[in-house]
Length: 165
Image (tube, rainbow, N blue to C red; front, side):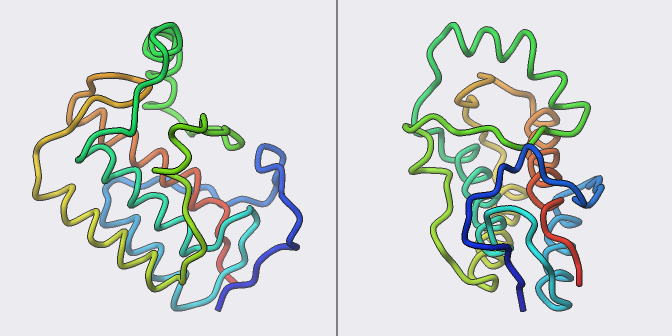
């Protein structure tokens, strides 16, 4: 049911017309994705709804299972001191490019909307039932609330590119 943009790579930092979203919990993320899948959507970015939901699931699983690595310590220090609190409180800015060692674990392959949604549902179930959280690859140790806020802000940013038809 998706309508995607042209095959050209979109500079997501400059995309207009994105949705303004604020999720209070992970169930709202799943419900929003299910509504888009059922009702149709237009993707303003480079990823389909299936890729977005698969990516969100991958990020949650990384929090549960551990990251593929850690950013160099100077970057982690700057991220903790100057970026973390801004991201936790406000919207994430699009256009960030993952370093190569994180890309394989966090960038989604082509997938169907239904497969991406199922991956997200599974990750949310795990997130709610498992208490163990590993240090974040950029921000280090996070409290459970910080982890939730980070995942919700992350979901808002990516889901904002999926616009209902």
